[in-house]
Amino acid sequence: MLEAKMQTEIQNKVNKKIAPLFAKYDMDFTSLESGMKWKPIVLIIGNYSSGKSTLINEIIGTDIQRTGQAPTDDAFTIITSEGRNRPEEVPGSTLINDDLLPFVKFKKYGEKLTSHLILKNIDSQLFENMAIIDSPGMLDATTEKDRGYDYMEVLGEFAKMADLIVLMFDPHKAGTIKETYSAIRNTLPEKSGEDRIIFVMSRIDECDNISDLVRSYGTLCWNMSQMTGRKDIPHIYLTYSSNVANSDKSVDWWPQERTELIEKVYAAPGLRLNHILEDIDRQLNELQIVCEASAEFTHRGRKLFSKFAKVTIGLGLGLFCFGDVITNSLISLPRQTLISALRGEGFSFMNLVLPLFFLCGTLAIGMVIFNAFGFKQLLSNTLADSSDLVSLDNEYRKNLWRKMSGKTEELIQNSKVKDIWLGHTGNLTKIRRFLEGDLKKYYDKLRS
Image (cartoon, rainbow, N blue to C red):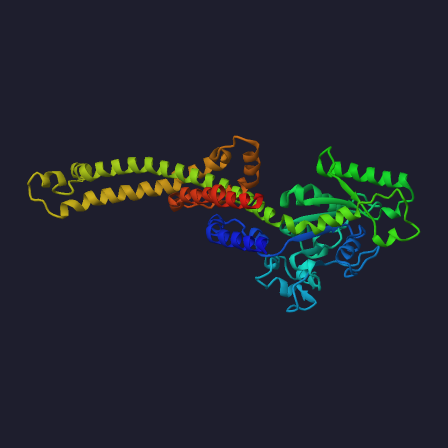
């Protein structure tokens, strides 16, 4: 109850203080918003024969998902307890239009995904504060066109929301599925932290002997080293169906890790608040570096404008004072110059017309030149080396900039002259206050 209250408090504070800043910099806030508004999520992914549904049924304690060697379910299935006010099955069309749920953002992927999205409402006290998402099995030779939506992008969105991701393999296709490679190599590292992912090789009961198991395990380890680009392989849980444990197939050398695996799934809700704070921290640092770069760009813009303004105003004042003298000497107009009028030779408003014309014309031409050449040159020079906008004095900042440089350059590319007067410094102060004040306070609460 205390955790739920704290989650609501964090959500309200972020929506009030931080959400408007994400909007100002055209940065996505929906994933952070989705993560704060709902319950803890466990995402189960893997190829179609990896035992996902079997594991889910065992966790829940009932056969809610169909199982089998061939593909049995091609939908993203959210399994949770939503109470008696919801039907046993809620279709995707309802989920993506319910602002109380975190699935509104999936509307952009179209009807194909919507028709392959469903919520199963089960009667379970445990799942009142937890949800499991079963995903369509990964395939080896599919294309985005075959599915009708970008599967990897959708998977990445679910991974952002998840507090625990269980990636499953079977011993017969130990890490050789094309979409599994894409998920491990690109999607999951970009969308989720490594600490949220656990790896499972299921169906080890189908190995004929320990040599067969070792061979499959070794193949998976080698494939994972290729997919991750790392030599150090994370722990891989070895498991099998609980039904097999009581059959004649059960043998002593099978690793007994099923209980530990299921306990990790049950423990996922306890990670929720920490993950919310991690996500806020990560996305605020991303926003901060974009804001820093924007502040530096506008500072350079104002500095350049100041130089143009000084030259233009100086030239304009010179022409205001002596422009009519020049025209008088060339074409005998005006008959009386401003200077001669001020000397007491009959000053009138008409004596100001030509000097004011010269002054205003000079200022207008100076502004046109700044727009057409000065500001465009500033844009070109900045985009040629945008990394010069921010301090990259450590590896974290460098990685952060690699991720956010594209967004920064997009914002700068779309800038207008009037944007150099925007108050990025004030926005930067708000971000830093939240990171160093509010966020630190919530981290301290979690530790206490």
